[in-house]
Length: 114
Length: 115
Image (cartoon, rainbow over all chains, first blue to last red; front, side, top):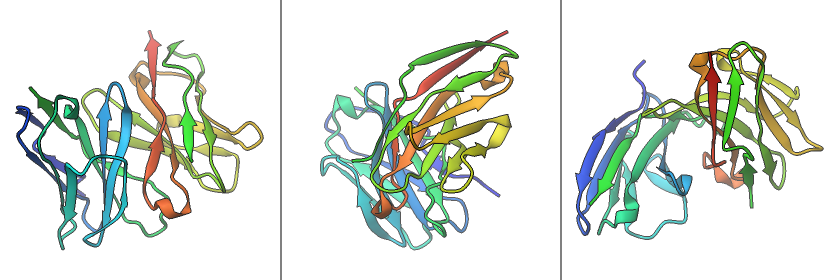
């Protein structure tokens, strides 16, 4: 069974640009969550989608947005990039049958903002 | 608000010795607690969880964790460390009953196992 796939794995952008990251969950998983990982702030929750609906959101500015498609694939977008947005962005999926929070993570998309 | 604390930035242990990585939590209601491991340039991998039941939880790769309600702790343990256990370990708690799959992570503890 294929794991969570994130693309691209690495990307470099400049300040002011925007970026879109993609996540394909494990087959059958309907819940997709996004986390930002930085050395200073650690792992922080961005948002969670379930059946194309955002049902939870972290404390990030509106520049961070996401969506989920009918096949459960998800994208997140960051507009007007800032240097502080440089991070590893992790996507996680789960079946959500028991809502016990056991997440399956992808390897992440490492974003560098210059 | 739910939170977890990992008081040690790094834990050093010799191969073959027992290891403990500490975690304390603060939650309202029943805690849903997790341990994840991260190897360099990789995503997180689930190790084990405590939802209810026995206070000693067994997980992947020979790891176990002890839930202690009175001390609000959920320490990760392994009887005999391997060099390959060297990685970054995260304790996490689910963010309340309405938190769905939102996890609050600790800052992480780097485990270094020396030959």
